[in-house]
Amino acid sequence: MAVTFHDLGSAAGLKKLDEYLLTRSYISGYQASKDDVTVYAALSGAPSSSYVNVCRWYNHIDALFRISGVSGEGCGVTVEGFASTEAVATPPAEDSKLQAAAAEDDDDDDDVDLFGEETEEEKKAAEERAAAIKASGKKKESGKSSVLLDVKPWDDETDMKKLEEAVRSVEMDGLHWGACKLLPVGYGIKKLQIMLTIVDDLVSVDTLIEEHLTVEPISEYVQSCDIVAFNKI
Image (tube, rainbow, N blue to C red):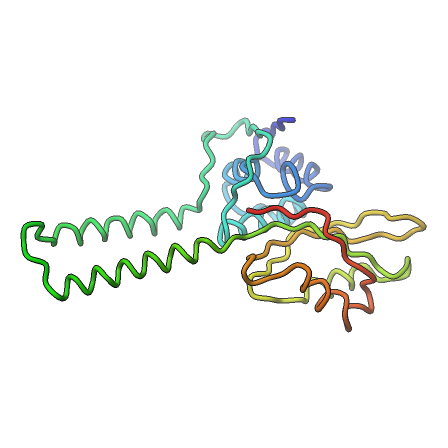
């Protein structure tokens, strides 16, 4: 179902967005999508810390832009009272870098003599460029995934704030923790539901759970972990 937001440049608009994100990690669904990109682009910058839920969401989407980008389709969000209706899929800083690189390539092309005989130096440079392109292609093949985890405590006396801190203390190359929330399980017990983004070639979710999240000292708070959703980005 499509969602509409109004005047995100105003306090009233941000308050509505903050209330909307109180129980959600993303604008729609369980992974970042074009809906998040649309709302992100409608904001002039990082929101005030007084909008706690918007700040949490904004920082997470901003981090995704820097490490992987956003590819989910979403449900189709509309932002009214915003001049631009077309979301930009990459940050302006990245666009500047791409434009600069393109300009540099154009300058290099101007120096090439298309009718001259290829020298040994030119052959070597061409081979090095081909190798670099091949290596770059291999790096791009390394996919990323968005994962939603249920982390369950031992009982209703477990300090859930310390449990979250213990979970987020796990640091690995290719692992990025995202938004989280507490959900009731029963008998006064709550579980922590938390999002994370992983680089598939660097992080195994099974290894993360078995060798980090359910062993000491974190096992003092965590009884078990379950994968709720696993989506390729």
